[in-house]
Length: 213
Image (cartoon, rainbow, N blue to C red; front, side):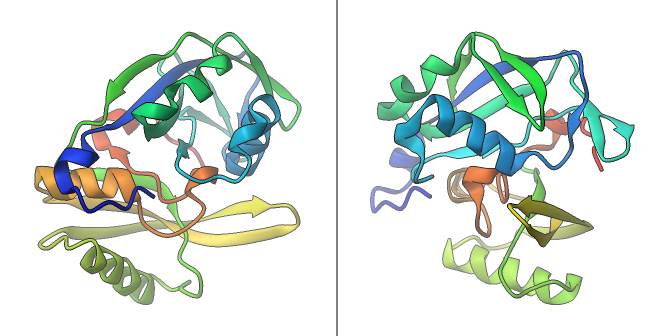
């Protein structure tokens, strides 16, 4: 997502805006496409999906592929320092996900911080739908990022619905990352559709209440 020749210094210019997500009704666990639509409706200039990532909103599973928002539920936007102002207007706004209303609070803004273990709810890599081949494809992407020694753990298969299509992928955890490797994964992600929440990694301790389906 953020290709650069300036290495670690430039990676440290990446920031996260973390908006509290408040709502009484359960929302779909698979909400990446709807979330992108809601954000671009409020901020049309980000419609192309370049230069930022939207992490899935975490919550607590309540059945039927639905999840309830909790006190730790957040909309996280990962982007560069110079684009913070584009996303600040989301504060205080209401968005609709599958007809369920969510209010976004005032965000905290901080630099991304490395962690030795990162998790993505869903990673999609075109053409790879079996765990073994998918793991090999993840490794190839890590190789391109010049990340060595990472441990890949592929979890349950998940889907994201984009219009009328269901796209397959897998929950993915990366362990034994040094700080620079961790920052590269946080910045570039793995696979495609990061503006829809796919391939967006977060430190594992931030996912403790995520039990979505």
